[in-house]
Image (cartoon, rainbow, N blue to C red; front, side):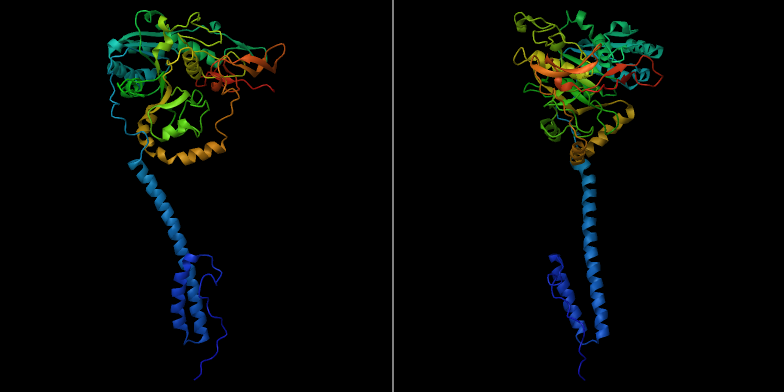
Length: 492
């Protein structure tokens, strides 16, 4: 019996002829087609149509399986990366071999601090300070704490700490008359104290003992502490292990820790500028926008070059805060102010005098160190951030820092993308100014003019520190409120 003619077309023999652009599917389709042809050649048309439907269905399922496999592999690879990175490639977890704490060369250290939290003084901070004195050696240490107007609880906590401290110390809790702090006149005519002027004054009070004991004791290092939770061994490593030379001595003009307000977020962005003077990226690892500072963080170095930093705990070469040795005083140099408006040792914290231009006192001190070093070649040893040394503003955050640093190598692509979207770093028209340079500045001219004007000016140190803003102390504040506010910017 003769087989009936079929009204269907032959199935395609290749993905190309079928118009399918997935060349990788061709061999699978061809094999399936051959099997289908052998099954259909002696079958009625109705059965052939059924086999065609099955072939199409199987082809579709095959493609879905392949797509599913790709997605599954992607997420499996991502999961493996998340699991293996903290195990095999953590960030700043394994300290260098020489990070062993102690004071190997018995260097003299002046510890300065401002703290107002009675619970911290009685708790983690006070315990860490006592432990740090043991690390450094009581005979090598001087502790200076200055606190003002924080109430009886803080005074009592400091009195208790004074009884436990084994080294020489000056611990002061007093009222600070604000009428002695310089004020600025706002556009409204009201006179207020700039926030940074106040903070600089308070920090300088903690350094005051240097004016007397500094005449008899030559300190090697100054360690400034914020109200942070820290490890005594970490503090010693910041002081003596950062950027060591061939003799094992730390080489820096300043070295900063990294401070965290929560387990992921870097806090002190206002005071920190990268090696090119740029402001920070978004405040999580690797913190900096593209450039040398970021590259060195990603390389795992312990001394990241910057223009300024603070990080809750900072070590300084003490030479900048003590009267200079006569052997390196340039002839005719005023120790407090050079002809180019450059401060000279002994340096102290300061604020910007200009209205509606703010810089952190913790940034300006680094700018002044660099400017002072410019009068004598070879005295600037570098300003660095040490990412191995981390502090926090509460004990819970501090406990998490050893864990969260394990995952940091996952963050750089995300950090770079978000920083770019956010427009970071911020533009600063004064970033590249050099001290003593003649520059054009847009400045606020107070009453009776009350307007911005372009003026010819001499650049002071620290142009890279500034932002266009004005922060002043509140005249009244409720419990729990911050002590300062931002004054709205007048139209330019």
